[in-house]
Length: 68
Ligand SMILES: [Zn+2]
Image 1 (cartoon, rainbow, N blue to C red):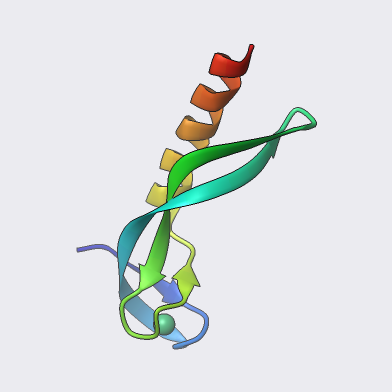
Image 2: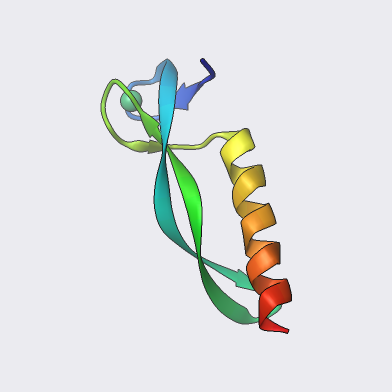
C-alpha cells in the first residue's frame, strides 16, 4: 500500500483511490474525464498522490487527443 502526507491528519497516511470525474484545463480548453482521486483512509479527505496525478495527466492527454 502506498502512503502520502495528509494535510488534515498532519502525518503520513495510507490512501485509497477511487474513480472520479475530473475537470482539467489543457491549452486553454477544459476537459472532463474519468480519472482517480486519492482519499486518506483515516479522515476521508482528498490527498495528493504523485502516482494518481500521473495517471490523471495521461487520461487528460487521451481526452485531448480524442477531441482533436
Ligand atoms: Zn487524513
